[in-house]
Length: 95
Image (cartoon, rainbow, N blue to C red; front, side):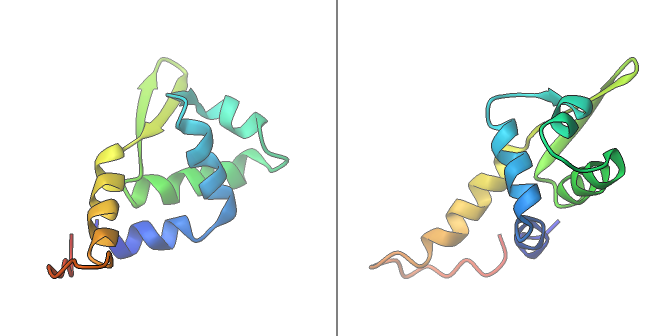
């Protein structure tokens, strides 16, 4: 996935809140859903978009699905943002 998919996934406030919840560590899908006043199907949709953008990893254990942050994508985004720092001459067009 490219950086544009990551930015598109981050454009939704619910997805940003899900990511914030995951910064504390891996969580099961049910616990993520319980933090929001949304249907399970809606949370599943948002988790799928985050997974498609490679912002989260999914792990299945028995009947449970766990999600955790994929920090390498965030590292790539930080590098991309770094090109806009004053004095930075390198252009990172497609990290």
